[in-house]
Amino acid sequence: MNHGGLPTLRILSHNVNGMRGAVRRRLLFSTLLDEGYDIVALQETHQAADTHAPPPGSARAVDGDEHAASTSEGDEWAREGAGPTRPWPGTAFWAPGVLGRRGVALLFSEKAVEELEPNLLTTDPQGRFISVTCTFDGQPFTVTSVYAPCTPEERCAFFTESLLPQLDPSHTHLAGGDFNCIADPLRDQTRPPPPP
Image 1 (cartoon, one colour):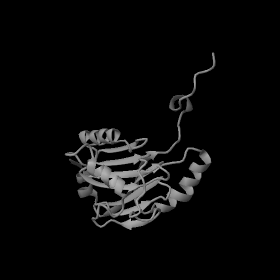
Image 2: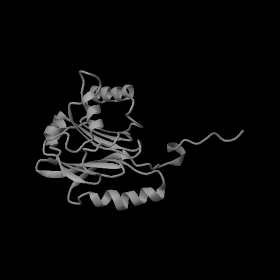
Image 3: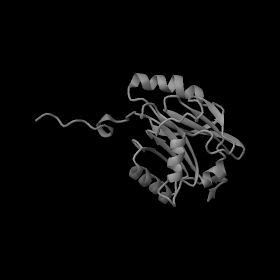
Image 4: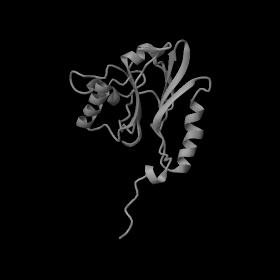
């Protein structure tokens, strides 16, 4: 359904805290499929790097090759989806983390691929962001999944030195992720109980 020429897309950003377990992965894909999400930004996927993947930190045109810019483990997870008869029905882009940590992904449903034509990939060598350039109505825009560092010093450097220089200022941007920031420490942070 369109509203004023714009597609209606369901978008989700989710820190999955690891996808290596098959049961957890299938439950995730089952939820994504059942809820009908069109664009999914995942953080902390923990997928392993693949020697056939493009070099981290590279930008690479995809040109319809769904495997050109993703790791084989991530591709296997998308093909596996929610089970043998329920693969992810679209395109998945993966940026592996390091030493079994970090890792981010962007999943596009068939509807989103048709509407948005995702075509250029930029990844971070540390598995902290992945960006896909899309086109809608002839205009480029970028979708990014972010997993920011926890410490304020590292987080500031990540945004100013790693992420922002990779984003084209002439594009509209849609970013989702785990920014590891809290707006209200009293409501957004778990604290240990006070001593008795």
